[in-house]
View 1 (cartoon, protein in one colour):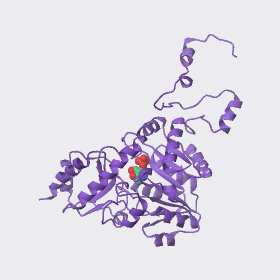
View 2 (spheres, helix red, strand yellow):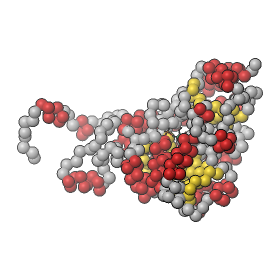
View 3 (tube, protein in one colour):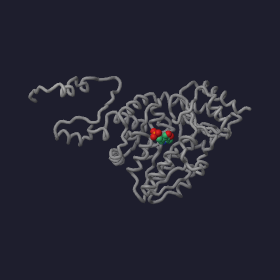
Length: 398
Ligand SMILES: Cc1ncc(COP(=O)(O)O)c(C=O)c1O
């Protein structure tokens, strides 16, 4: 018991009011907008540290914990770290696990800014990097070394949907005691669970399909191993790449409708890809549900069915700047936005956005040309979406 003291109003203004946290049982998740959590005496401080309880926002936060637990469940992992962006999830993992002299083996078909981060940061860290086409497993086996620490790929590459055989790659990595790290952003844990196929680390840009509402920037790192989690957690704390409570709260709200949204988005992508593939003026369409998809056998092995693959497709129009502009201006529903995974259909031009800094010869290898447009399908009615694209593509008729 403490003796009562009469404090001034200026002090009381800080302490009066209900202790709401102990009384309420809200139906929706509350948001913990606090930089720190109170502790009593030094014994309580020690107990909180021992129990890995809540102390300071950069270390732990209840909103991140709830979202992390849900993502661990979806990805069939053990622990998940929530980071300030997808790029934060990727780079924090690199900082935590790579040392000078390590070898990093990466698929040559990846998101442009991941490519930039590897070239800038890993070079600075004196990590030896090799890019290989991961659709060629013999080439991967040839390129892996005794000092390979991480083998890195996206399940379906941004923006061409080139697929990686996660189980086979994980076997190759594990033979050399390397870690298999997978970016599941394009495919989501609804379509595939890379950790169940042998991967050790799965990252997601939560900014995309998992949030789905295009209003928050966040990323996640999910692992199966406690030691790996602790190693990355301590570096995440020091790099300060922890996700903010507000962004985490928004994504936690969005993720509850993931199953409903993403299944429709993936089906819409498959249906739209199929229509575009038949269009006489379109040179090429990239989506794993297409009958002529070059890795069809792998697509059937990785995914349950053709409507549960990815909500992302890309297609190549003739290299005609003014007609591409006319096509974009004619669309009613789909609109340009350099993001993906939202509930409304968006398009982006990889050469002007995700792959802006990638050198020309690398772009060629990645299958990215001036006429290539990337589409992220939303939850619109599929017939409306197809009709909109079909009428806008009439600009190529004359
Ligand atoms: C495949 C992929 N991984 C990671 C990222 C990075 O995510 P964020 O923008 O949340 O940093 C992106 C962004 O577009 C992406 O497409």
